[in-house]
Image (tube, rainbow, N blue to C red; front, side):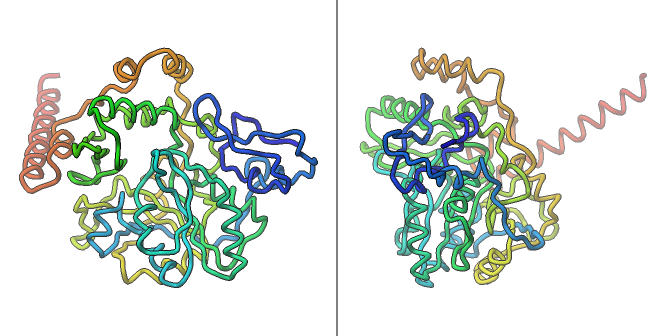
Length: 409
């Protein structure tokens, strides 16, 4: 039996789900990431785990012409409660109303993240919103196959490697299965998040009852993390200052395999791909960006096209060229590079307290004047006017510099 090397293992857990003798279990490595663990005495060397692995095997899908869109839900409440444009919720609602089930990532009671199955609309809020942690698949792939064999529709959402893991486990496609992945920056360490959680709880002398990675109270572009405590107090940490977001986006805490991710490109393994449409530019008044959240949508297969067409009346969407789409997210062209400081960070993480980690590694990002205004006060009329004045002054300033350079040189 041969499992993939630990440095390229994505933690999709297809091997664990596929083993007929339960010779593989789920454990964690030193950084807190999920990995398969072999119980040698149970293994019968059947090779099922090897055949299911999306790293040892190439997962192929039949494709049609790929289409890209900027899109958001017409439902303002749904859009507000979502990380970007609310499109995953629209897709999921259609499946649920049709008697199907939806699989996705949800917080557990102790604020780890696991994949769960829902079949009721009331439970959709559990799956809504970004979770910047790797979810534990548990036995979700087995549950997917069981529901598919009943003939019910299934919408499976997850990271690209998890969708690939599902196909590796199933060893075939199903007409009643629609898969939806997201453009992934990489998965950060659960151990780091738990240290961050403990640090916040110590700061507020109270435990979490709720946590949100992407609160849009001020802005979709410059979002906040939000923690609600048993004491009733609320923490908002904006994108530029929150220690966990700074650690995550500086890339030292990503899983090793994420730096060489084979799914970080436009060739998607899923039927549908969703992401934030960063760098969105409107081409007419109807496409105006109100900073309430805009999703980037890629339709990768005919099944994906069919489902999107069924919810199109609940959305506002505008087609975008694939080149524009690819530039909206770096992870659509390549994986993020492993920082040269990664080993140093993990050595510090083992030996420093979290305040010291923040001071050295999780310090705030510098902001220019418009970024400060939007992240602190939101995109209201006054802020937009001040930002416009700032940019106009900068334009005039640089024109004057250019003029004097030409005049006196």
